[in-house]
Amino acid sequence: MSEAAGRRRFTRAAWVNVLGNTAKIVAEGSVGLLFGSVALLADAAHSVADLVASLVVLVWGSSRFDGADSDHPHGHARIEPLTALFVGAIIVLLGGNLLYESVQSLIESPDLTFSPLMVGALLFAMADMYALYWYTERMNVGLDSTALDALAADCLNDLYTSVAALVGIAGIAFGYPVLDAVAGGVVSLLVIYQGIAIGRENLSYLSGKAAPADRNEDVRNTLLAHESVYGVHDLAVFWDGPVLEVEAHVEVDGDLTLREAHDLETALVTSVGELDQIEDVHVHLDPSGVGEWKTTQEIPSTPVVSDVTPSEFDVAGDSSQSTVGENSTEE
Image (tube, rainbow, N blue to C red; front, top):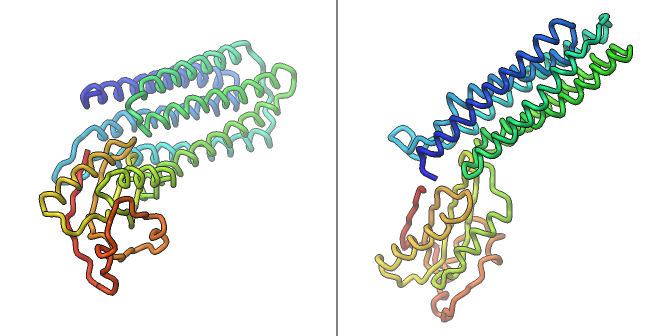
């Protein structure tokens, strides 16, 4: 998918989220205000946060498609998780406010009157959110956007909160209006939980958290698969925004010419860069057998996979590390 096509798809998905959340706010908010239902107002207020989140994603999120420039030499990938983190913070704050309103409603025990419009508003909201969830997920295929993932998860969560609100409306219909406030409290807790989950995930992307162990092994095995590689050490695979960055020291024949070393590095960088979600690859070539590892526990996990004579490793006691070359790429 071209960058222009990806940007158009991203923008279209964000706009649909804006319109879908606006429709839900109007339907639930107007009925909730008319009949004084805390559960309906809580669900509508949740969608206010969703609307703000959608607008933030629409305005900021598309920056992920901007290429590297003099101010951002590694591109703009981190803007997207920053956007999603902002969305999570808004959701948590709103959830706290809704929880407070629900507790107040429990204390005051207002007299509420049931209306079929309450059920109609909730059924419309549930259909609206399911359609929005399905569309956002469909648009995100091939984009793998963390911001759109957050919006889709929020739409799905809206279905659950609407079910809780429906319980509150049923309480009003059967003469137990206290269930409306209880449902509002449950919705509020779900909103807070969702906001925290979104924030934690995207904070990992921003803080450069290490990738899962299986991703490290994928990179290590890809490097070791090359016939000219004797071992791998000081391997680091970590998040740089929503994509992965790789740094690795690779042990090779110390007698390679500069041209041979350059070609080998290029081949290694290319092969690792083809792995899923990996954007930047930095490979440092070391003469085999030097044995200067930063992380000593990696020594047993870097087997020699080529026929090398013992004399090539007879360099013990040498305190200097000769660098054959270094290369990096940014996809």
